[in-house]
Length: 173
Image 1 (cartoon, rainbow, N blue to C red):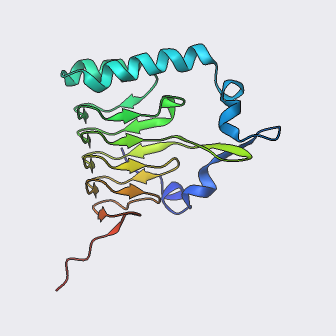
Image 2 (cartoon, rainbow, N blue to C red):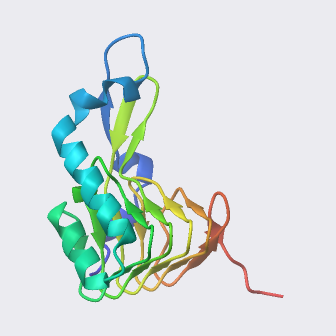
């Protein structure tokens, strides 16, 4: 799964779809207008099952039911969580690892709008335990995200990032 050059050269914010919400309250109050409640309920039940399922094959099958694109040999750790509202915007490449309790978000509910965007995890990329990946982010092939990191921008192929927000690690001494 090669990263498209145009995707890698554009800010994640430029790749997000913006959806204004009406009224005086925050956009999360309008979530039933954004996504059918029965679909979200179905997604939630399947995500809960996938989070605790010990079988990687069954977990990938369950996530596929939600529209997640899961590459051959991809592995989701226990308690890892794909976006419940828009799981169909997630692509995880071949032999990629989404670590224990990592979260891949495809939406952001803000005060006056909500935003949606794809999350793409390249082949053989690794996302550490407890990491959070925000919508619109691409994690390149063979890239690594350290545990408990917050990924707010793209991670180039082969790069290792860590921290809040995640930044490239400098191994020079």
